[in-house]
Picture 1 (cartoon, helix red, strand yellow):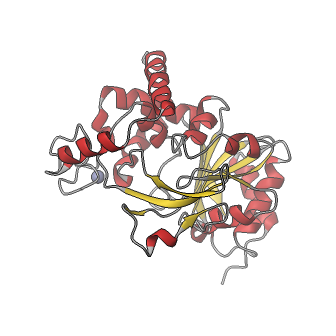
Picture 2: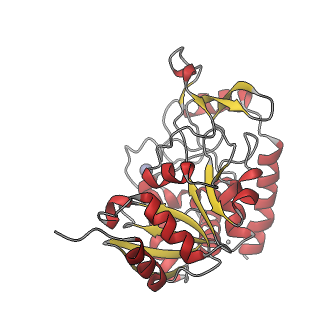
Length: 309
Ligand SMILES: [Zn+2]
């Protein structure tokens, strides 16, 4: 049997992989892939914090469940707040409870951060924000890096594909989903309706060869027993924007039965109900000012880049 993996082991592996003082990291971690870590995810967080130092910042998604709208009586009892458990795994939940962590106030796609820029990155991510705006800021304004611990098969994406989908305004027809949440600004419990497009996890891997070809993969190695890699969020976003501007369907998985890939405005073989849902959604969910602003930013960005999630 292998000995437990210690904080010192993790720090050594992280340094060899290329994690440096001052790094701003988006974490995508499969704890199970690392092996048995003494102390669990808190040990990894400690090792990461010591490696990036007080100058660095750790960010992880801490998304919460949504339910069909209108909410049933039972589901209406789930109220998203600062400490609602995330389905995103043990690291996410350890981040939520880590001393000094900040969690954004988005009721569903919340991000939790620790370190120098934690407050800055999370404080503007509110119920009115685009779901993945934290990652957009990290990619476009901070040149942050994505640390994936676990194989591409185990851990989906590099943090930026949803940003590209949002920036390009690609629209998916989704069922009405949401959750109740506690609005810290007003002290009221409100209902939040999901207002962004998702994407096909299988199809997101179509981008992987491009990340390698265009220099977005900065280093690869092991953390514990897990295959791990660092990618440049700025570069993966540029690659995704450029690719999706040329071909909106690039992230489709190719499975003719995939309901996710058949639910977009531009799906070649849309689900029969998609058109009706589109009308209903646009009637009920006017795009917020922020989304419009994001969409405008996208056009500018796409021009700059094509010029390139
Ligand atoms: Zn698919």
